[in-house]
Image (cartoon, rainbow, N blue to C red; front, side):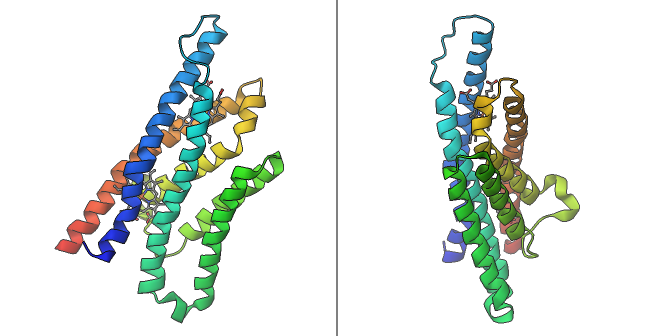
Length: 218
Ligand code: HEM
Ligand code: HEM
């Protein structure tokens, strides 16, 4: 294993040994949270402990941030390899190189501030800034987007699921406050889609990894 292979594997390894187990835990608590709430609404005494909702949110917060970090690692690898090394960005277009480093830092800081923000306006602002950072980094030409086959693209699935995680972080207080359940339903809808996208990431990620290995070995 040389350094090139090790760096290429950081992202997939982080996904498999950290992010996917967290997704499993969060999904399990999600089902229990819902069941408990429906049982309570029907007046049935539930055997599910009251803490499942809090556990879902506690691990959910960790999982959402981990997904954003995972995408940033995927992007960083592609940007360093495709941009800084292959396109010699610091020699050919130093301003663009510095701008990109700045955007990575800016996205990370926006994510940290999103975790800390309490008023609605700041949560909305930092969620938008984090998502914008991801979109700017992801729209550079060396990011492999599989544009013609966008419906099976690791990039489009990944970016969409990551933005859904950012939205989940931003709307936590709304889910609790809203008596009409509209935010709760929005949360369930977005994150059920995210769950399918995560499965898609497992499939498309494996395919891309295998394709890279297979074609470079030929
Ligand atoms: C795989 C991803 C996720 C799925 C499928 C999911 C699904 C759900 C479901 C089904 C519920 C119960 C809704 C009900 O009461 O009917 C729920 C509640 C909730 N979720 Fe998630 N969720 C996910 C990730 C997250 C994340 C990442 C966060 C936070 C960053 C989060 C925050 C919340 C909150 C605050 C509640 C309300 C909990 C309560 O009532 O005590 N969820 N979610
Ligand atoms: C939650 C799950 C995941 C998310 C959100 C995610 C997200 C991303 C993002 C945003 C990129 C950079 C854009 C790109 O180059 O396509 C990327 C690249 C990559 N990811 Fe993932 N990923 C996930 C899981 C996985 C898994 C499980 C594997 C492999 C087992 C994997 C393998 C790769 C590879 C090989 C690349 C670079 C090559 C390529 O672009 O196709 N990813 N990922």
